[in-house]
Every structure is written in structure tokens, then in C-alpha cells.
Amino acid sequence: MFAAMAAAAVGAQGRPHAPYEYPRLMWDISSQQVIFQSGNYARLITLQDGRLMAAAESYGPNGIKVSYSVDNGKYWTSPELIAPNPANVGNAVPDLVQLSDGTILVAYNPRPSEPYSEDRHFGIRTMRSTDNGATWEGPIYIYDASWLGQDGCWEPSFLEMPDGEVHCYFANEHPYTESGEQEISMCRSFDKGLTWSDPERVTFRAGSRDGMPSAIITDAGEIVVIVEDNGHGGYSSFRATTMRCTVEENWHDCWVSGSSDRRNMIFSNAEDKEYLSAAPYIRKLPSGYTIASWQGLAGNRPGGNEDMFVAVGDKDARNFMQVSAPFSQPTDSRSLWNSVNVGFDGKVFALGSLSGPNSGSAITLLEGFTLDHVSAAVGTPKIDASFSGEDWTVKKCEQIILGQGCRTRSTHDFLYDNDYLYFFSYVQDNQIMTDQIEKDGVYLTIDVENTPENYPQPGMYRIFYNVDGTVTFTYGSGNRWNAADEVPEGIKTEIKQSRAYYFIETAIPWSALGLESAPVDRVMRVNVEISDRRSKEHRKEAIPGAVANQSWTWPEFHLLPGDLDGVETAVADNNGPESPVEYYNLQGVRVENPSDGIFIRRQGSKVTKEIIR
Image (cartoon, rainbow, N blue to C red):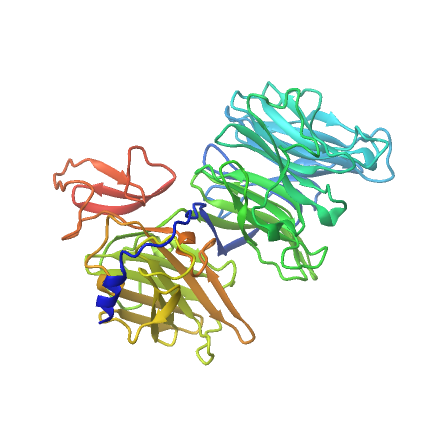
């Protein structure tokens, strides 16, 4: 009865709504680690040889230190001091870049301590390596401001232009000795960091203090510099703001004033604009979309205990949304002077200086990744609440990783065959609760019609897998979720519970979703949401950017081509020993030269998944 009703519902049309197209930024809370035992202002880049390189201002002994990882961030070398502090001067706020010719530059900011003297100036310097960090030359002079703290310079940041010219941006009080104002200045190098031009003004708001610059070049050819802008007055009014010009303009005879239409707060949502967003940092994803980090007080955190926040912006570095807090610091702790980096494989790294009421600052790293869409490969697993020995779409069923919000890590993945859609969840939870009204478990929500509506519609299905073994099945109709009289025939579910985790594995007949067979030619949408019951609270966490009832906000869901009776495959079978190797991305599109991602590898009739770095 229910299958017939569901089949009749398929094909209903909703009102048009533009789909949510941003990539979903997910954080893997199991990856958190300390890479510098003390320090501030950590920055990280991926070198051309594949290593990661991090730099920070640090203590014991004082100065700028660097560290390297050869395994994409799992292990790090002992910190190396490359710019020790001179007497009564603190070298601070490093930034680093590897230029297209392989030269590595590490900029920093000498800051004299009081009592000030005329022989010690606030300045910008750089160290330089032409042998992948084996040896260093410097310090190389970039700029000097005053010897007085109120007229100093601060916070350098590099950008290499397409023609090889190098920019060094920094906050500069020196032009405003009669006021407390500050601009963003920029010096240029045309010889890979050996010599530098005089500074040029890039941004200035009269009566204000633009600070903490960081820059990228968008796919559209704009130089975008993000700053903290306190144009509304005071530290609590700092807001992450972008300034821009074209690559062709290159800041020649132009700068961004306080009233310029080239000055824009980064946030899309009015609520995000209300909170402090200081010390910003910006980077670009391989897809062209952008990410920005800052330290802020969202969620009414107390002043002085800022946490790190990250948001995803569009390809023009505008309209940032999907705000997350990678470290989710408690309100008596903080994460300051943060930054983000994007690796060659699209992995995202968050770095913050974490400290609490009983701990000093430690440079801490957390790994994340972006999800553009969700896929299911062909496969028929055994429904036994175990993925051991089975080949799911992504290794270890880690296609979707949640946990940043709930602080309960979970991984999720899909497979399919002509009869069933398969779903697997692994939830690490050391407080599993089954004696409450709202219990622990996982919601799986599918829209087989890709409905552009704000409320549940025909073709949308929501299944709750309760950790106690019960299953609740609802379907969309009349702008609401409706409970089925009974769980549709054929759904098979196994749940295995331990003291600190539980597994869910399920097989859902396509008929339960109103379909006759696997819809390989159909774009669907899917959402996964964790229900995490605690003794005094109930937490929920969905795929970032996904709103429970609005399927246009959920990621697209694709069935990958493969060898399956009754399912059309993308290429003809060929079992010869010399069969060509062909690759498809996770949307089933053939890729001629795959790099940096997860791909489907086909040689003859053998179809496997492969991660290419």
C-alpha cells in the first residue's frame, strides 16, 4: 500500500528555488593535534614537493619557527628556529609563500619592547630559501616604521602575482603620527624577494584602523585583500571585510577608501554581521570557491575568549556563509590569531593558538575537507552492521564526516544495486542514551525528485534509525512530514551498539522510495543528521548548509556508473588484458587527466575507487 502511494507521489512539481551550490566544509575532530607547544599566529602552506610547512611566532627560545610534515599533516618535524629574536625585539606574525620558481619566503614583524629607543624600529623583514627550506638567507629588509609603538607596522602577508611580481601587504600606522589611524600598505618585489619597493597605500578608512591583511586572486582575476575593519568604532566592532581591484589595475593609482563600493563586509547573513570577526585570513579552494577564518564572539561568547570561525564564500570572495567553529572552544577558553590553508588535494587545514584557564597558548591543527556532492558506487554489502572487508564508495565509509557541532564524530557512506540503496553510519558516542523521548540515532533524508521547495514534498523521505533498533519512516506531502502506517516492506536494518560507539547498516528497497529500480540517470538530494542526546541537552548536526525540510539546500546525490544488470553503464565492457584505464569523477563524468581527489577507476570490467594526490 505504502509503495503504491509513494509511487503516485513521484513526479509532483514544487515551486522553483535556486539550489545551494556552495561546497560543504566538514571538520574531522579526530585529527586535532598540537604542532607547536607554544606560540601565536600560525600559518601553513603546501610546498611543491608535497610537504606541508608551518610557521609561527614562538617562545623558548623566542623567534620565528618552522616545522614540516611529509605525510599531509599526521606527523611534524621538530620546530626549527629560523629568525631568532634580537635583544629587546620580538619577531612576530610570520607569513609564508612558495613562489612559482620554488623560492620560499617567510615574512615577519620585528616589534621592539619598551623602553623604546631610536635604534630599534618596528618593521617588516623576510627570510628566504632557494633549497626547499634546507638553508635560509636574511633577514632581508622590506620596510621600517617608527621606533614608537603607536606609529609602528604590523602583520605582513604575501601574494604572488601571475607574472611573478610579489606583494607584501601589512598594517601601517607610520603615515599617521598625529592620529591613531592605520592603513594597509603594500611593497613589491620583482626579484623573488631579494629587494622591495617603497610602500603604497592599498586601503584606508579615515578615523579607523584597517588591519591584519591577507590576499588571494580569484578565478575572475581580482586581487582580494581581507582585513579587520573597525569602521564602526572599537575592537568589538572589527568586522572581516574585503577590498579589491583587478589584476590589471594591480593597485596602481588606486586604493580603497572607507566609502568605496570595493569595500564589503564578507557575510551573506545579517546575523553573522552582528558579531566580532577580527584577525581574518582568506584562501581559495580548488573549485574556485573561497574560505575565510577569523576570531570572533558568535554565540555571545564573552569578550577575551574569542573562538576560531570559518565560512565558505563564493568564487568572487563574497557572500560568506556556512559558518563553523573548527575547535568549538568552551566559553572559558579561546582560539586566537587563526589561519586556514588549502592543500593540493583540497584538504583544508585550520590552525589556531588554543589556550584555556589553566593552559598557555599551543598551536593546534585540525583537518577538514569539502564535499561538493554525495555519491553511491555499485555494491551489495552484507547487512550485518560492519563494513569490515567491504568496499564502500569511500574508504572506511568516510564520504561524510560529522562531529564539529555535536563533538561526536560520525562517518557515513552509500552503495547501491538494482534492488536497494545501502547506507552505513559509524557514530562514536560515549554517552549512548535510549531512555529519553529524543534518543541517539541518525536521520537519513532523501529527495528523489530534487524538489525546489521549502517544505516536505512528494518524493521526499525521512528515515530515523534509533540506536535502540527501531526505525521510523516518514514521507513528504502537504508541506509536512507524514508518518507511514508501518515501515515499508523490504527495509533491512542492523544496529550494533557498544559502550562508546554504534554502527547502523541498512538496505532500502528502491520501491520504498517510489522507484522501480536504481535511478542512475537521476539527480537526487540527500541529507544526514545526527541526533545526539546528552543528560541535559539534545544536539543535532546535519551536513553543513543543509536545512532539514529544504531539500534544495542538501547536497546532490548521484549513483555512479558500474557493472550492474539492468543499470546502464558509462562505457562498454572490455575484458582484454590491455584494456585502457579510464577515470570518472564522483558525478560519473569521464576525466582525462585526474588529479587531487577521489575517482572511479575502470579497466575492462573491473571498477574500483582510487584516491589520487
